[in-house]
Image 1 (cartoon, chains in turn yellow, purple):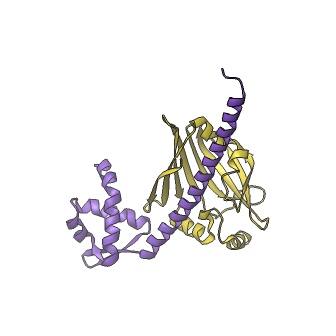
Image 2: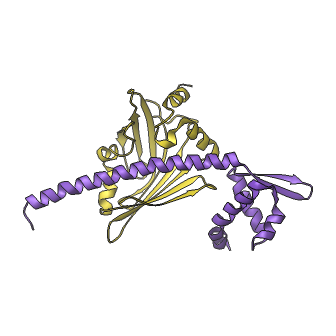
Length: 161
Length: 114
């Protein structure tokens, strides 16, 4: 089972996606809570993710990097706004330098994830919001919204500049 | 009132975007089209304006609303990309869950039943 509904909210620059999984909520939560499992799905096959710091509690910090085909690394951070296992997770996601320190002036996205267990499995509702139109344009230019699949060179240039 | 505003919001704003892409529309003309007050329409236009999807220009006593097709296209493209990234993630999550339950099944069949 997979994505059952997608809603794009142009006014708020937000995507809401509903997915149904054939597993209990605790099991789906583990996909986020266990860094080894998380890294096998977060990045696209071309850019697998490695999670370094992984404190999935309210106020906790997460740092990760994605490795591209040429071995180049793109670092990112999460700040956990709220974690309520195995029901909901709220975080902000941004770009980091090599040490995992957030890079100022880089786009930030907000994410809210909710798990509801029903008879047949678990429904995950995910809402991802661009912080502002400017940041959305910046991300679009870098191709990062696509999971870094495109324009990797452009992003390197941006990070270097 | 506020709930109603939200319930109608999506379709109304989408419709305003469609109308204002063909011709510039004044807020008062838009207010004639929808079963709502001038103030309510103005509120919808303000939301669209804040999102950068329309521009508003004062023409004498009229406020003309015009859709910015590039802005709409760009927002759509960004959300499309985000959607495809998440579809990929959900697919990989599903695979992981299936793999794990396969292993569990095998362990259960091979193991002792309680």
